[in-house]
Amino acid sequence: MKEQFSGCMVRVHFGEDDRWQGKPLHEAIVARCKQLEIAEVIVFRGIEGFGSGSRIRRSGHWTFSKDAPIQLSIIDTEEQVARLLPLLDTMVEEGLVATSRVDAIRYRRSSQPPRSGS
Amino acid sequence: MLSPGKAVKVTIYLSEGSTHHGVPIYSSILDFLFYRGVAGATVTKGIAGFGADHHMHSSNLIDISDHLPIKIEFIESRETVDAMLGKLEEMAGTGLIETQETTIAKPAQTSRARPKVHPEHLKIEGKAQMMRIYLSEEDRWNGKPLYKALVEAMRANDIAGVTVYRGILGYGAHRRMHKDESLFSAHHGSVMLSAIDTAAKLRAFLPMVDRMVEEGLVVFSDVDIIKYAYRAHDAQTETQSPAQAPPRSEGGLP
Image (cartoon, rainbow over all chains, first blue to last red; front, side, top):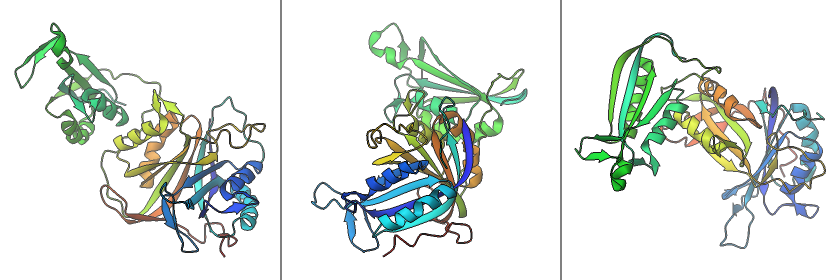
């Protein structure tokens, strides 16, 4: 089953050490996204980078610091993303949030029921 | 889809034992023809023969039986064949390639539409599109990981570049939402493919995606190519048109 929609992609950049209420920030954001039934969320760990604080972030087995750059990619309709953005405002203390408009196609096995919500 | 009339029949003669990057040559050529949307191809194995080196290969001797002659045949239009010959010559190595004018009396029938073939590798400047495909790493297609099959298919269709990223966490269209399941029990294996080319070429490739992806999400966005070389994009930026894009959240910035 194929479903086309025009939506929004949000990319959130921060460090792996960032936390939200004691939990790693990226896990906390994915959990909130799931509560909001956001369509697609994926988290990437970069191998090197720097961000708003201009600290170089590295992942590696040879260093104690594992503050690797993290990029979260979120895709859904604009209405769904609009519900999410205020939450990101409160959760991301130091980082970057970028949005862009996208055209999306969702493939689903026809036996599955359509997503509720949104 | 082939139509009745003039066409070209291509025959490639190989040795069974010859390999290309560790894979039998006939198999990589067959993959190439498949992903280029060739109407059909047949591989036959000879029982005896000899080639340019004038060694007799026959199935009677066990020890050289993996050097039996292999023949690949396919029929396509003149333009398609001409566009593929260079690559085929490179892949066939020491093998022989023969082309022959032929006439199609009746083309083979198929129940599915064939994706359009765009053989030319165009140079891209300025506007382009990025296609991101979100899948599960465990998804398979024809016995191989789907993300690998997609990369092979894109390569055969001359998509300018593609990168596969493995996520450390995620969920989406490729994974059922189980409310009762603990959140992080099923997050392994989210994969994203990111491909960049002209909108026309990516759209032409979409029927192939339709056939291969059962569950997943495909996302298109406009990008500006700043620099482009044959093998690598050195840099590209996402178009962030303020008129079109939703307002950028300021909350994340200190």
